[in-house]
Length: 169
Image (cartoon, rainbow, N blue to C red):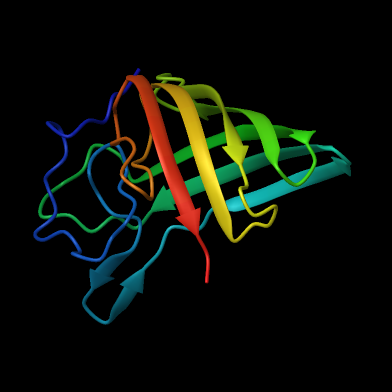
């Protein structure tokens, strides 16, 4: 089994300051290259089932990575992984309170098998999506990427508890 980790891969010359997601090796998915921009393409297909007051979302994805920009030789020319995620939400009090569960699993070629499992509750004080209070509990194991909002970092294992609010104008 070949293992790719930060110690075996030369680090990028400079990370993008505006990157919001990084792989487990701390490389952003969009990289500036001479003559253009390289991107990571994630192919996904999903199903949304909405039987009020229950909503279920199931998504599967494929992520091939290649054409790496590096300062030296790399042990691999490409990386491939696929996985799934599922979310379910039940509105206990219509327009006011919903409880939900989330889960995800990645089948990667390095056999790390990262996963996450969590749940929480969303409360809508004005009975609209304009203001939401959210309580969230999530356990992650070997996260393959950092989260968009900084809840966890690539490679992290642990449990996260968060309490937050969203206000939309």
